[in-house]
Length: 86
Image (cartoon, rainbow, N blue to C red; front, side, top):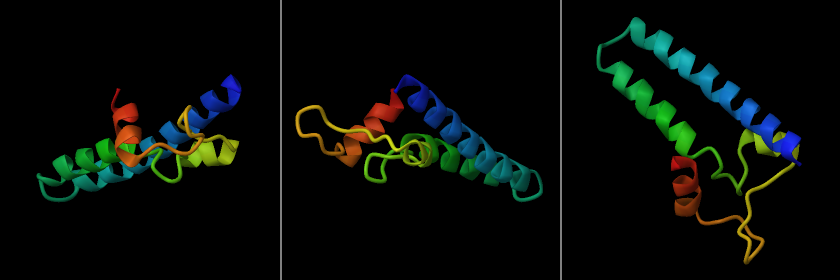
């Protein structure tokens, strides 16, 4: 199980880094304020990566899911964002 979680994290970070590189490259050739927009999008991707039914793309590929211990259901969106924040 730990190998699946680690591989899911690696997949998620690779996807986020790929998307972020696209935005950073675009920001070099566009308006100066676009860099702040790019960082905002990257930060949002990090915070909201598990909000699709308790799964990110990496977790979906590894067939694992974030669930609440008491209900065995995906936690609320606020809890998932708070979890990714820390």
